Length: 144
Image 1 (tube, one colour):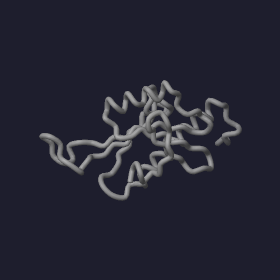
Image 2 (cartoon, rainbow, N blue to C red):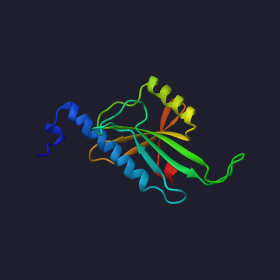
Image 3 (cartoon, rainbow, N blue to C red):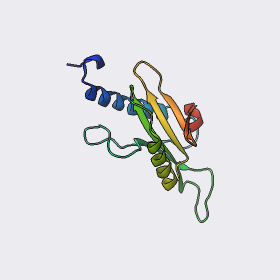
Image 4 (cartoon, helix red, strand yellow):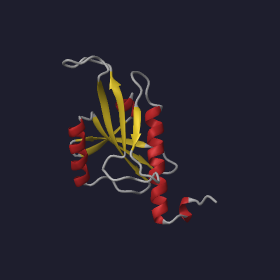
């Protein structure tokens, strides 16, 4: 028997909205690509498809065919986008979370840090981290 979100316990509701936030983000990234190499998504859900440890929920990665690197050929390098998802009424990342996201992005040389917010009955919204502020972006700007 399927229960509506209003009938779920707060923990089950949080798990449900987090799962849907990841699902909707994957859908958006997959169907945004219009040119270039295909984005591949890595989901870091745990064994029960719940959130796993760590600050990054998803990684979007694709081969970079635009240029050669020193001693490299086209397609040897990658473009990486780190994605954190939020569903329902979960709060945005704290200042400490932002510092961790920036360290991870610097370590892996990610081209962007994206926050994907999803609420039931609404469109998913993407925000790009610039400095210490989130700025709304269209999917085409990041994944087009």
